[in-house]
Length: 153
Image (spheres, rainbow, N blue to C red):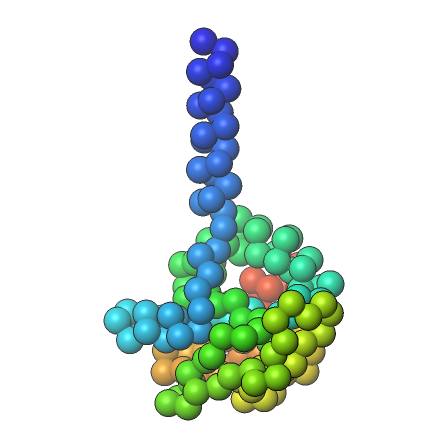
């Protein structure tokens, strides 16, 4: 009986943990979803070496209120500003031709970041239902700060 209870508690705990995660997608996937069911896009622009980006990911993006708000109101995108995958925006394809697989630390900057006019990392961007940038939020934010910034737009 104790083993059954333990298994049940572990199973419920893992379901609850999954319920408190943002379902991230690529920018191209979000744009495709937008065409089927229009909704703004929330984009987290990060790099692998960025300490504040990691804190934002582990703390703010796992806060239940943030997870609920972003999941309900946006298509959520994670974009590595030094990553390899191509991105299509407004009919133009952007890539990272200088990307070096397996490089430790900083890598080449993705061409798409130039379009975003980033001021630093982390940067969070909101695109309206037509794909236009309507809000840029720069830096590490607590859950409360991020929710306030998103609700003010």
